[in-house]
Length: 152
Image (cartoon, rainbow, N blue to C red; front, side, top):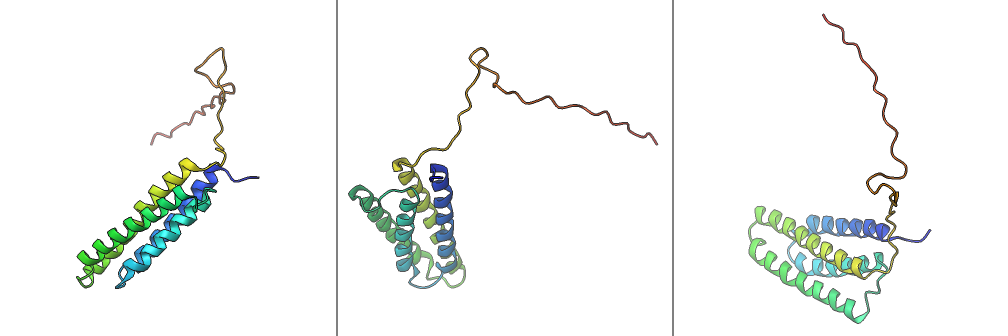
């Protein structure tokens, strides 16, 4: 069986979740903004692969570079603003780096999904021409069972 758009969606969501978790766990480390920028770039490349899109096509390469630059700017701002505060700042920095990874991941999923040539596996159920409101095979009615209650 070939891969469908829904399979790619599931794979891409898992990739973004994994990278987001990684950012949350390592975002507190001093200097992490630099390696998390590289991680965001790797995530973008992997999401492109999940949708069967060649990430090294010039248009797609520009999207990866844009994502990396956006990641670097956001990561730098986050690191500078909250990273200097011990403990609480580090926790906030980790959460912010994870949120940054999630936002970038969601954006690239949308971007590469729109450009994917994978087939859509959604099943469309045709309606009966004579009655546009009812499906061809309506569900069977449920049988009601009377239950006697004991009065005490």
